[in-house]
Amino acid sequence: MTYCFAPPSVSAVPVAGSNLLFPVHRIYCVGKNYAAHVREMGSDPSREPPCFFLKPADAIVLDSVMSYPPGTNNLHYEGELVLAIGKGGADIEPDEASGHIFGYALGLDMTRRDLQTHAGKLGQPWDTGKAFDESAPLSPITPVEQCGLLERGSIRLWVNSQLRQEADISQLIWSCNEIISQLSRLYTLVPGDLVFTGTPAGVGPVEVGDEIRLEIHRLGQLHLKIGKNS
Image 1: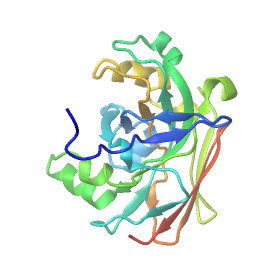
Image 2: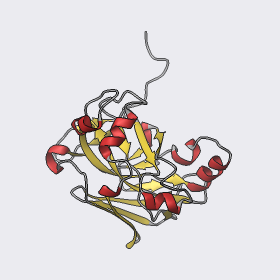
Image 3: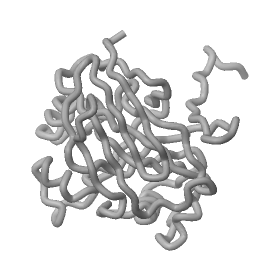
Image 4: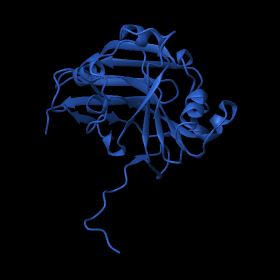
């Protein structure tokens, strides 16, 4: 048997400090996982638990420029800590979840906010607002062996040198271990999965020419410029 056309190449992310590539299986994302962000989006963190959604693996952007996407006039940034899963499993207990983390990355959950909001009002999925081309800019992955387990530490984002987001990883409503545990009860996690853990308050729009800088404690920085739609 042969393919009717050539299969797409595997999406992969460089591993910091090595020549290795991390092959990406799925990208899971957690929404509403910092209380202040939940409130700024008009919801109540005490009543609405974090929610899950997915992005396609080929939404990853590794270079320094992302094209402004079509179909929107309201592109938003959301800076996030990303978990890279190195050991799969199902029904993982929270106290065992850290053993499934290969490493961490800095990520941007870029969002067509107008499309997401419209879909939400109609009770429709968020796919057009969240799962579009180049919607997941990502840094190289730093292995746990290099940075240790991240349970606290600053996360900050600037747009054109203006600080827009600032929080601490310890403020996550669901911790990294709890996220892995909950996901593993909905999906069988496999090596190669990435998990965006949620964004702090301070999200907002960007335009063509804007420059984003995301910084997370012990992981360095991710730089991104918004370019014209190609």
